Length: 417
Image (cartoon, rainbow, N blue to C red; front, side, top):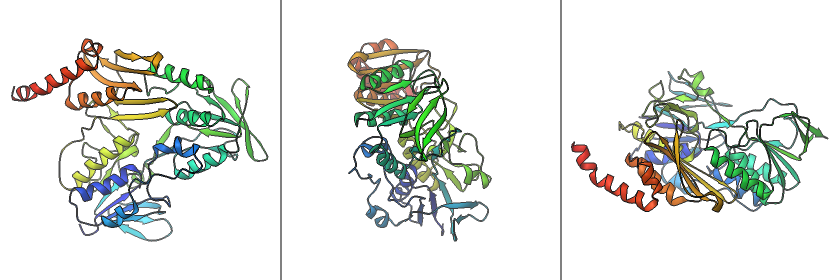
């Protein structure tokens, strides 16, 4: 492949794709294109340590020497205007083209817009990039009152961080509970209780009708009931939308993201997609999903590299996620939609517990608060295809470990079966 592989997007997925190509022995050209003028960086800290510490620096995904040392042509500050799939060429904004033999789209996602009067005011922000985090950090230093629109992971992580830094924080969520369908109601209620104990005001089942400003800077959020919430900064965190426009214009099939098969290939064989922008039929649930997590991005990127090198194994990584909200480390493994029962281990009152979700007798996933050992054991169980009986879970971690060991010991006999 004389033009090699071009990767569009220099986040977790794009950088991992480049790294995995070299780790798997690919020796052709690798071009990594990013639209930010930064060395690729870790995103999870942006909503936590970075915005509360004026001296915090971004954490690089890889050191600068990694790119030159592995012959990865990293091109920052480059925006792609168009994919010419037939000619296998990218049109670069401003001028120039980049030719490819294989293209990996790691274009990620962007914050969902809110149609609301006043969103154009200074002090109204969203968090997706390092530039956004720098702006939030700068604005928080001069803000006493902060309103966060959206009670998802990002909004709540920021709420806990800014409240710990002394800000008066109000979270406004349109539906009747936090974290939507992301976690079980008992987890959502626990998170709410802990945040309110910190002094975060949480308003669920509430919408904002408009934002008001003073001298071009936001000064208040007005709820649909007419309550005026003071705010020198309003953070919008109502979810994200996948960046599919380049792929769609090139004729790639779209469906809640760039549709890919079990090898990360799109409807155009030379184009693959990974990370937040990719949607696919999940091996575990049988349903179509688009997962927004670092783990999903990096696992898909590893598989895309292997696909390019001619390996044919399907995607079968067990999904897992995490979020740090105040004094709560939330860890989730598996996909729990469709569950009809659950088992609780630990004590919510002690801020340490896990919920094991079942559909019938099948373990779907585990949600943990400050019980990392449960999370790691859950990853081993789901990765092995082991679904312990609910009564085994109720017996505690030692019983689970023993049951998993027995299952794995019997695996050769079952395979020979």
